[in-house]
Each structure stands twice: as structure tokens, then as C-alpha cells.
Picture (cartoon, rainbow, N blue to C red):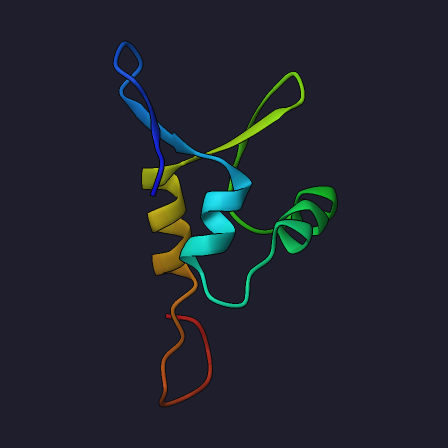
Length: 74
């Protein structure tokens, strides 16, 4: 995984391509659709550059966990 770290701000960022590589079945196109629909993980936009904070991405993944017992999110 290629991350960009901002030492002054304490953030570690990844590009949409990295997010898509980390999550099986997820595509850069789907991430773009989610951004347009205001869904999916939080992101930062600097001009035309889209970045995802690694810690926020982990939190979004954790919040997306499903319980096998009732089919609802935890």
C-alpha cells in the first residue's frame, strides 16, 4: 500500500486506486459513484485530488460490519 503521510497534520492518506485495491470487489468507479451520491467512506478533496484518510477508512470499514445472526449492521 502506498500512503502519503502528512507529518505536520498527523494524517496518512491513500488515493482511490489504493482503496479499491484494499477492498475486494470495490472499484475506483464505484468510489466515484459513492462520492457523487454522498455515500461510502469520508474523503478529502484538494482541487482535483481525492484522498482518503487511512484511520477514517478503517472506521468506515468497521462500521460496515454485518452480524451473521440478524443480517443487520452492528
